[in-house]
Image (cartoon, rainbow, N blue to C red):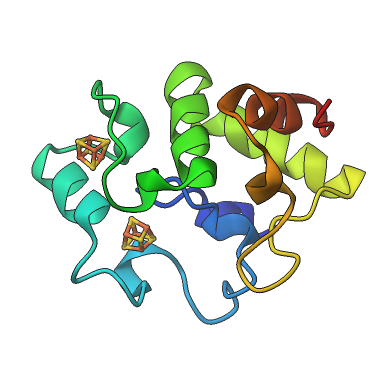
Length: 123
Ligand code: SF4
Ligand code: SF4
C-alpha cells in the first residue's frame, strides 16, 4: 500500500491501485478531463466527494466500491478508511485481483461493503 497516494476524489483507493507505480491520482488519471466527480468536487471546493452532503451517484459513484468508500470516509474520515484498508491488506483482502476488480467489488450491498472495510470479512 502506498498510503501517501490516499483516496481519489471519486473514492477510488489510489493507495492500493495496481496502476499506482505510474499514476499518482486525479492529476494523472486518464479520465481526469471528462471526470464528473473531479470537476464537480473541485467546483464545490471539496477535497473529494466524501465531503459532499449530497447522496450522489454521478460518474464513478454509480459503482458500489467508490460510492461506499466515499460514504465511509464521509462518516468516519479518510484516515479511518485508510487505516481499515491498510489493516485489510495485511489480512489478505485484495483491492485489485483481476484488472480493476477485487474483493471490495464483490459486495452486494453498502452494509456488506462497510463490514468488509471494518472487519476484513463480508459476512
Ligand atoms: S476518476 Fe476522476 S476523481 Fe477518480 S481518480 Fe480519475 S480523475 Fe480522479
Ligand atoms: S458527490 Fe456528486 S455532487 Fe457531490 S461533489 Fe461529488 S460529484 Fe459533485
